[in-house]
Length: 224
Ligand SMILES: O=C(O)[C@H](O)[C@@H](O)[C@H](O)[C@H](O)COP(=O)(O)O
Image (cartoon, rainbow, N blue to C red; front, side, top):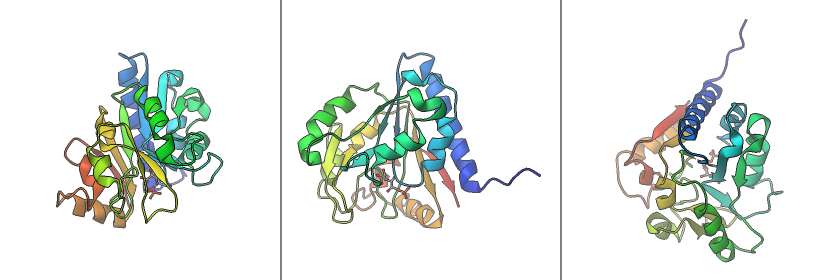
């Protein structure tokens, strides 16, 4: 009797297959490739499935769409999430580039992080976005004072402060997140499905920042 796999776990396996194929295709013609992933809780089964995929991972750069400005030892660190769930098994040789440094604030650390991000193998082979219930993606939050900047700047990263979030954050800008051959959105549950549906029926990116990624091909990976 084969054990039933949940729709969300099946979705994670399918997304891992799609991302692995994107990397495989680009690795056939490029020495190095780049994968940009999101933090939060949704990606964990996807990251763990991707980590089991045989690839020349030493030729793969991995970075984050955004990060909380906390130590990697902090439970809220997205870098900690990547190190725990992706940089293991087959993918342990991947080159992970974090978005924080020793600066006290993302504003102080922004320039150094920007240089590190800009030096990666752009355009990315894949950007995997998540989405919050407020329609944010990466750290492009509707209530962030820096949202307009993050949606318009050509700079690779933006330090953001958001009343709705407990920590200061740094985010790849919308412009930089657009610099990818493929984009995926990984969300689950009816509430996020409804937010995405609302985002698709309007164009005000400040209200629902995910809208910044609905004008180009987007692989939507959703499960109930
Ligand atoms: O740092 C983060 O929190 C993520 O990058 C963020 O953009 C995430 O994708 C959404 O907040 C959804 O998070 P969940 O998957 O936990 O709902």
